[in-house]
Length: 309
Ligand code: GUN
Image (cartoon, rainbow, N blue to C red; front, side, top):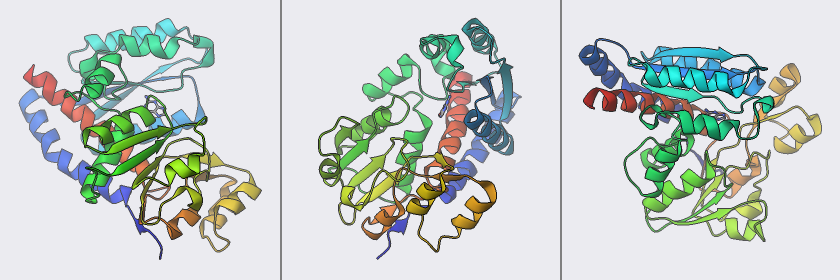
Protein backbone atom coordinates (compact mmCIF):
# COMPACT_ATOMS: atom_id res chain seq x y z
CA UNK A 1 0.00 0.00 0.00
CA UNK A 2 1.34 3.45 -0.84
CA UNK A 3 2.37 5.72 2.04
CA UNK A 4 0.08 8.48 3.27
CA UNK A 5 1.26 11.78 1.77
CA UNK A 6 2.11 14.47 4.33
CA UNK A 7 0.99 17.61 2.53
CA UNK A 8 3.43 20.42 3.31
CA UNK A 9 1.69 22.87 1.00
CA UNK A 10 -1.57 22.54 2.95
CA UNK A 11 0.19 22.80 6.33
CA UNK A 12 2.11 25.87 5.13
CA UNK A 13 -1.12 27.47 3.99
CA UNK A 14 -2.68 26.82 7.41
CA UNK A 15 0.36 28.33 9.17
CA UNK A 16 0.15 31.43 6.98
CA UNK A 17 -3.60 31.75 7.61
CA UNK A 18 -2.97 31.60 11.36
CA UNK A 19 -0.36 34.36 11.03
CA UNK A 20 -2.73 36.76 9.28
CA UNK A 21 -4.58 38.01 12.41
CA UNK A 22 -1.25 38.36 14.25
CA UNK A 23 0.15 40.47 11.40
CA UNK A 24 -2.98 42.64 11.50
CA UNK A 25 -2.79 43.05 15.29
CA UNK A 26 0.91 43.93 15.14
CA UNK A 27 0.35 46.41 12.32
CA UNK A 28 -2.42 48.10 14.29
CA UNK A 29 -0.44 48.32 17.53
CA UNK A 30 2.92 49.26 16.03
CA UNK A 31 1.55 51.57 13.36
CA UNK A 32 3.63 49.74 10.74
CA UNK A 33 3.85 46.28 9.16
CA UNK A 34 6.42 43.69 10.28
CA UNK A 35 9.56 44.09 8.21
CA UNK A 36 12.15 41.58 7.00
CA UNK A 37 15.51 42.54 5.52
CA UNK A 38 17.01 39.99 3.14
CA UNK A 39 20.66 40.34 2.19
CA UNK A 40 21.69 38.57 -1.03
CA UNK A 41 25.34 38.64 -2.06
CA UNK A 42 26.20 37.52 -5.58
CA UNK A 43 24.04 35.59 -8.04
CA UNK A 44 23.86 31.95 -6.91
CA UNK A 45 20.98 30.58 -9.06
CA UNK A 46 19.45 28.58 -6.19
CA UNK A 47 19.58 31.62 -3.88
CA UNK A 48 17.93 33.82 -6.52
CA UNK A 49 14.97 31.41 -6.61
CA UNK A 50 14.75 31.06 -2.79
CA UNK A 51 14.91 34.83 -2.29
CA UNK A 52 12.31 35.53 -4.97
CA UNK A 53 9.95 33.07 -3.23
CA UNK A 54 10.63 34.58 0.18
CA UNK A 55 9.92 38.14 -1.06
CA UNK A 56 6.71 37.08 -2.78
CA UNK A 57 5.35 35.01 0.13
CA UNK A 58 6.21 37.71 2.68
CA UNK A 59 4.38 40.34 0.62
CA UNK A 60 1.29 38.13 0.42
CA UNK A 61 1.35 37.79 4.23
CA UNK A 62 1.41 41.55 4.82
CA UNK A 63 5.09 41.55 5.78
CA UNK A 64 7.32 44.08 4.03
CA UNK A 65 10.39 42.28 2.76
CA UNK A 66 13.24 44.42 1.54
CA UNK A 67 16.08 43.02 -0.56
CA UNK A 68 19.60 44.36 -0.08
CA UNK A 69 21.83 43.22 -2.94
CA UNK A 70 25.60 43.04 -2.55
CA UNK A 71 27.80 42.61 -5.65
CA UNK A 72 29.47 39.19 -6.15
CA UNK A 73 32.96 40.72 -5.99
CA UNK A 74 32.35 42.88 -2.89
CA UNK A 75 34.31 42.20 0.30
CA UNK A 76 32.50 40.58 3.24
CA UNK A 77 32.65 43.97 5.00
CA UNK A 78 29.83 45.13 2.70
CA UNK A 79 27.61 42.33 3.99
CA UNK A 80 28.62 43.19 7.56
CA UNK A 81 27.73 46.84 6.93
CA UNK A 82 24.31 45.84 5.54
CA UNK A 83 23.71 43.69 8.64
CA UNK A 84 24.80 46.53 10.96
CA UNK A 85 22.38 48.90 9.21
CA UNK A 86 19.49 46.42 9.63
CA UNK A 87 20.46 45.76 13.26
CA UNK A 88 20.22 49.51 13.92
CA UNK A 89 16.94 50.09 12.11
CA UNK A 90 14.04 50.26 14.55
CA UNK A 91 11.54 49.26 11.87
CA UNK A 92 13.44 46.12 10.79
CA UNK A 93 12.22 43.07 12.73
CA UNK A 94 13.97 40.27 10.87
CA UNK A 95 17.32 39.86 9.15
CA UNK A 96 18.28 37.04 6.82
CA UNK A 97 21.57 36.72 4.94
CA UNK A 98 21.12 34.19 2.18
CA UNK A 99 23.65 31.35 2.00
CA UNK A 100 25.95 30.59 0.33
CA UNK A 101 28.01 33.77 0.34
CA UNK A 102 30.37 34.22 -2.65
CA UNK A 103 33.52 32.14 -2.15
CA UNK A 104 35.76 35.15 -2.63
CA UNK A 105 34.44 36.59 0.66
CA UNK A 106 36.58 34.03 2.46
CA UNK A 107 36.13 30.77 4.34
CA UNK A 108 35.08 32.50 7.56
CA UNK A 109 32.57 34.88 5.91
CA UNK A 110 29.46 32.96 7.00
CA UNK A 111 30.58 32.82 10.65
CA UNK A 112 31.53 36.49 10.70
CA UNK A 113 28.14 37.42 9.30
CA UNK A 114 26.23 35.18 11.74
CA UNK A 115 28.17 36.66 14.64
CA UNK A 116 27.08 40.14 13.52
CA UNK A 117 23.30 39.55 13.35
CA UNK A 118 21.24 40.76 16.33
CA UNK A 119 19.83 37.48 17.79
CA UNK A 120 16.47 39.21 18.39
CA UNK A 121 16.21 39.71 14.60
CA UNK A 122 17.76 36.37 13.58
CA UNK A 123 14.74 34.88 11.79
CA UNK A 124 16.86 32.02 10.37
CA UNK A 125 17.76 30.94 13.92
CA UNK A 126 21.39 30.51 12.87
CA UNK A 127 23.22 32.81 15.33
CA UNK A 128 25.19 31.20 18.17
CA UNK A 129 22.82 32.78 20.72
CA UNK A 130 19.73 31.18 19.20
CA UNK A 131 21.47 27.84 18.60
CA UNK A 132 22.54 27.87 22.26
CA UNK A 133 18.97 28.58 23.36
CA UNK A 134 17.78 25.65 21.25
CA UNK A 135 20.37 23.33 22.82
CA UNK A 136 19.12 24.36 26.27
CA UNK A 137 15.45 24.14 25.20
CA UNK A 138 14.88 27.81 25.96
CA UNK A 139 12.61 30.11 23.92
CA UNK A 140 14.31 31.63 20.89
CA UNK A 141 14.17 31.77 17.11
CA UNK A 142 14.55 28.27 15.61
CA UNK A 143 15.85 27.34 12.14
CA UNK A 144 12.91 27.38 9.73
CA UNK A 145 13.18 23.98 8.01
CA UNK A 146 13.34 21.83 11.17
CA UNK A 147 10.75 24.06 12.89
CA UNK A 148 8.47 23.56 9.87
CA UNK A 149 8.95 19.79 10.00
CA UNK A 150 7.94 19.78 13.69
CA UNK A 151 4.81 21.77 12.79
CA UNK A 152 3.96 19.27 10.06
CA UNK A 153 4.50 16.24 12.33
CA UNK A 154 2.37 17.81 15.01
CA UNK A 155 -0.46 18.82 12.63
CA UNK A 156 -0.41 15.29 11.18
CA UNK A 157 -0.51 13.89 14.73
CA UNK A 158 2.66 11.87 14.37
CA UNK A 159 3.57 10.51 17.83
CA UNK A 160 7.04 11.75 18.78
CA UNK A 161 7.41 10.97 22.49
CA UNK A 162 9.28 7.69 22.92
CA UNK A 163 9.65 7.21 19.14
CA UNK A 164 12.97 6.29 17.58
CA UNK A 165 14.02 9.11 15.26
CA UNK A 166 16.94 8.95 12.86
CA UNK A 167 18.20 12.12 11.17
CA UNK A 168 20.47 11.56 8.18
CA UNK A 169 22.61 14.69 7.81
CA UNK A 170 24.41 16.80 10.39
CA UNK A 171 24.25 20.31 8.94
CA UNK A 172 23.93 23.35 11.19
CA UNK A 173 20.79 24.46 9.38
CA UNK A 174 18.82 21.21 9.29
CA UNK A 175 20.33 18.03 10.77
CA UNK A 176 21.53 19.33 14.14
CA UNK A 177 18.53 21.55 15.00
CA UNK A 178 16.16 18.80 13.76
CA UNK A 179 17.75 16.28 16.13
CA UNK A 180 17.48 18.72 19.06
CA UNK A 181 13.82 19.54 18.39
CA UNK A 182 12.95 15.82 18.25
CA UNK A 183 14.98 15.21 21.41
CA UNK A 184 13.12 17.98 23.26
CA UNK A 185 9.86 16.25 22.32
CA UNK A 186 11.24 13.10 23.96
CA UNK A 187 12.17 11.06 20.88
CA UNK A 188 15.22 8.79 21.05
CA UNK A 189 17.40 10.42 18.43
CA UNK A 190 20.30 9.19 16.30
CA UNK A 191 22.18 11.45 13.88
CA UNK A 192 23.77 9.69 10.88
CA UNK A 193 26.18 11.06 8.31
CA UNK A 194 28.49 10.08 5.47
CA UNK A 195 30.78 8.10 7.77
CA UNK A 196 28.09 6.18 9.64
CA UNK A 197 28.71 2.45 9.41
CA UNK A 198 25.84 0.45 7.89
CA UNK A 199 23.62 3.47 7.42
CA UNK A 200 20.63 1.51 6.04
CA UNK A 201 20.56 -0.69 9.16
CA UNK A 202 20.63 2.34 11.49
CA UNK A 203 17.98 4.13 9.41
CA UNK A 204 15.79 1.01 9.57
CA UNK A 205 15.47 1.41 13.34
CA UNK A 206 13.57 4.68 12.83
CA UNK A 207 9.90 5.29 13.46
CA UNK A 208 10.59 8.80 12.14
CA UNK A 209 13.28 9.10 9.46
CA UNK A 210 14.46 12.53 8.32
CA UNK A 211 16.63 12.65 5.18
CA UNK A 212 18.66 15.85 4.88
CA UNK A 213 21.80 14.95 2.94
CA UNK A 214 21.34 16.63 -0.43
CA UNK A 215 21.79 13.46 -2.51
CA UNK A 216 19.02 12.68 -5.01
CA UNK A 217 17.14 9.46 -4.26
CA UNK A 218 19.72 8.35 -1.66
CA UNK A 219 17.20 6.82 0.76
CA UNK A 220 15.90 3.59 -0.77
CA UNK A 221 13.41 1.06 0.68
CA UNK A 222 16.23 -0.83 2.45
CA UNK A 223 16.62 2.26 4.73
CA UNK A 224 13.01 2.21 5.83
CA UNK A 225 11.17 0.24 8.50
CA UNK A 226 7.70 -0.71 7.23
CA UNK A 227 5.20 1.91 8.38
CA UNK A 228 7.83 4.55 9.29
CA UNK A 229 7.18 8.26 8.82
CA UNK A 230 9.72 9.55 6.28
CA UNK A 231 10.51 13.25 5.92
CA UNK A 232 12.36 14.24 2.76
CA UNK A 233 14.28 17.52 3.16
CA UNK A 234 16.14 17.20 -0.17
CA UNK A 235 15.73 19.87 -2.83
CA UNK A 236 18.06 18.60 -5.55
CA UNK A 237 18.03 19.96 -9.08
CA UNK A 238 18.84 17.07 -11.45
CA UNK A 239 19.57 17.49 -15.16
CA UNK A 240 21.06 14.03 -15.91
CA UNK A 241 18.37 12.15 -17.84
CA UNK A 242 19.57 8.66 -16.84
CA UNK A 243 19.39 9.70 -13.17
CA UNK A 244 15.92 11.21 -13.61
CA UNK A 245 14.75 7.94 -15.17
CA UNK A 246 16.12 6.00 -12.20
CA UNK A 247 14.35 8.36 -9.78
CA UNK A 248 10.91 8.46 -11.36
CA UNK A 249 8.47 5.67 -12.20
CA UNK A 250 8.24 5.16 -16.01
CA UNK A 251 4.66 6.49 -16.04
CA UNK A 252 5.43 9.60 -13.96
CA UNK A 253 3.80 12.77 -15.28
CA UNK A 254 6.92 14.63 -14.11
CA UNK A 255 8.91 13.11 -17.02
CA UNK A 256 7.10 15.48 -19.38
CA UNK A 257 8.13 18.46 -17.21
CA UNK A 258 11.73 17.24 -17.33
CA UNK A 259 11.62 16.90 -21.14
CA UNK A 260 10.40 20.50 -21.36
CA UNK A 261 12.71 22.15 -18.81
CA UNK A 262 15.81 19.93 -18.90
CA UNK A 263 15.95 19.73 -15.10
CA UNK A 264 13.79 18.52 -12.24
CA UNK A 265 13.71 19.02 -8.49
CA UNK A 266 13.93 15.72 -6.62
CA UNK A 267 14.28 14.79 -2.98
CA UNK A 268 16.77 12.68 -1.03
CA UNK A 269 14.22 9.86 -0.82
CA UNK A 270 13.66 7.44 -3.70
CA UNK A 271 9.96 7.32 -4.73
CA UNK A 272 9.91 3.51 -4.23
CA UNK A 273 10.09 4.24 -0.46
CA UNK A 274 6.40 5.05 -0.76
CA UNK A 275 5.73 1.28 -0.93
CA UNK A 276 7.33 0.71 2.51
CA UNK A 277 6.79 3.91 4.52
CA UNK A 278 3.59 4.61 6.44
CA UNK A 279 3.73 8.32 5.62
CA UNK A 280 5.99 10.41 3.41
CA UNK A 281 6.55 14.07 2.54
CA UNK A 282 6.58 14.64 -1.23
CA UNK A 283 9.12 16.71 -3.19
CA UNK A 284 8.00 19.22 -4.28
CA UNK A 285 5.14 20.13 -1.94
CA UNK A 286 6.51 18.71 1.32
CA UNK A 287 9.13 20.45 3.42
CA UNK A 288 9.90 23.33 0.99
CA UNK A 289 6.71 25.38 1.53
CA UNK A 290 6.98 24.86 5.30
CA UNK A 291 10.42 26.49 5.42
CA UNK A 292 9.09 29.74 4.01
CA UNK A 293 5.96 29.64 6.20
CA UNK A 294 8.20 29.32 9.28
CA UNK A 295 10.37 32.21 8.09
CA UNK A 296 7.24 34.35 8.13
CA UNK A 297 6.24 32.92 11.52
CA UNK A 298 9.69 33.76 12.92
CA UNK A 299 9.47 37.29 11.47
CA UNK A 300 6.09 37.87 13.12
CA UNK A 301 7.34 36.38 16.42
CA UNK A 302 10.44 38.63 16.30
CA UNK A 303 8.27 41.68 15.55
CA UNK A 304 5.91 40.88 18.45
CA UNK A 305 8.79 40.29 20.86
CA UNK A 306 10.44 43.58 19.87
CA UNK A 307 7.17 45.41 20.47
CA UNK A 308 7.00 43.93 23.97
CA UNK A 309 10.65 44.64 24.75
N1 GUN B 1 20.39 28.86 1.91
C1 GUN B 1 19.73 27.68 1.80
N2 GUN B 1 18.80 27.59 2.77
C2 GUN B 1 18.87 28.72 3.50
C3 GUN B 1 18.15 29.20 4.63
O1 GUN B 1 17.25 28.57 5.19
N3 GUN B 1 18.51 30.44 5.07
C4 GUN B 1 19.50 31.16 4.49
N4 GUN B 1 19.80 32.34 5.02
N5 GUN B 1 20.19 30.73 3.46
C5 GUN B 1 19.86 29.52 2.96
